[in-house]
Image (cartoon, rainbow, N blue to C red; front, side):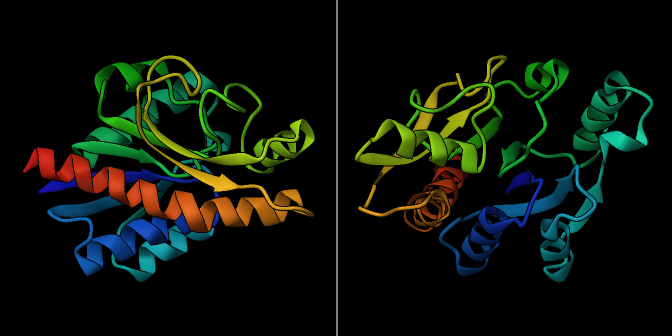
Length: 197
């Protein structure tokens, strides 16, 4: 059984896609051990609770400095006893000590086709604003392993999404979620779960 912790800062739509995949068996042999969020207002915490998943709030605001928060994040992940850490819209830089301890066991979903529109400053709507400003015709999403860099780890899956005439960043963001993110993140976890079995 692949035990995963899902780290998320916002609404948790990717988390919902994972919950649904575990329930319907399209993500086999997997248990969501915990949902961890840095944001007290994250609806993801509510989604976790509604599905009987341990939901943990770990806000940097509750710690004297980033170092203390980083240590607490590592300790929290350790305490969940997980095989895989899934970043599903987690807007906190993963501390070096977590990346090292969980090397090749942390995956992230990014709303573009890496290496385009990724790295520092590219998150959420900013990615889609940049894609539209550049005039690209195809965008998409990428699931990749997390390494010490920002969006630089080995790519697991990518899915392309066409940009349409008249797209706003919000419309494009929604299409990328529906057509790419919610499909390839569960798919990547399923692939890892099969290898883990």
